[in-house]
Length: 306
Image (tube, rainbow, N blue to C red; front, top):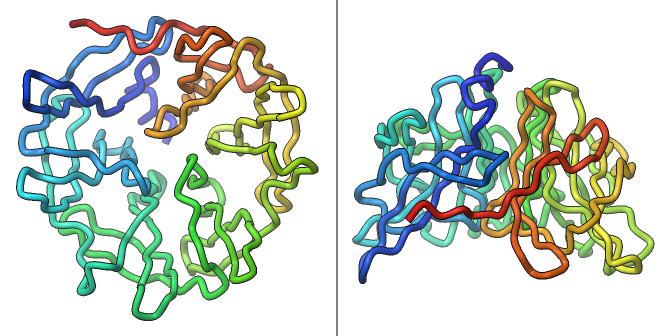
C-alpha cells in the first residue's frame, strides 16, 4: 500500500471550484504542500457541483482514482471516478442507487488493502443505518450489516476514517439518547467492535476533530481545541477507548478549516496537513510532523496561479 502512496508523496489531490465569468468549472488539481501552489491537471466536464457534505470524497491509490459525488447540469447525482494523472472522468454511474429519494449513502472510504469502497446507508423507511460496500463502476451498494444502535451519523468535521491494518471503518455517531461515540465497524462482518464515548472532554466547548489514520504507523491522529486556552493541539486517539493524548500544541494556529475538506495525511512522511488560520486571520496550508508535533511548513493557501 505504501508504494502506491509514493505516487503522490509530494502532492495532495483535491478538487477546486473555479469561477469563469457567469459559468462554473470544476477542476482536478495537484498541490505542493511546501509552497501552497497548485497546478490544474484538467477540468471535469459535465460536473456542475461537487458534493462535500456528507462526505463523498475518497482516494483509490491503487488505481490512482479520485472518487467523489457530484451533480451534472441537469441536477442528476453521480459517483465520479477521475484519473488522478490525467483528470479524465473514467466512471460516472448514478449515485446513490436507492428506491426512496429520501434515503442516502454517505461517508465514503476506500480500503486500498482490499480494493473496496465502503460507506454508510440511511434507510428512512426503516429509520435504520447500515454499513455497506459500494461498486464504483455501477454505483450499486451492498448491505454488509445493520447498525441497530446508531441513530445519527456525524458527517463533519471529518470524523470518518478507515484503518487498513485492522480492517476497521471508524466514524462518530450518536445513539437514541443523544450520546456520541467513536464507532469501529469490522469491515468484513459489519459488526460494531468498539464504541467508546467520544470525545472524552471535561469542557463541552472543547473538541477533537479531523481524524486521520496513519496506516504506516498504526495510529489515529486528530486536532484538539482547548477553549480555556484558545489553543489547538495535535493529538493521537485510541479508537478502542476514545482517549486522546496530546502530542504538542500548534502555536500560531487560531482556526482549523474542515469544511469543505481541507485536511489530509501523508503516510510516507508522517505529515498531517490542513488549512488553518493564524491570529491575523490569514490562511495557511500547515504541515505537521506527527512524530514530534512540529510545524514543518505553513505557506499561504491557496496560492493562486491566475
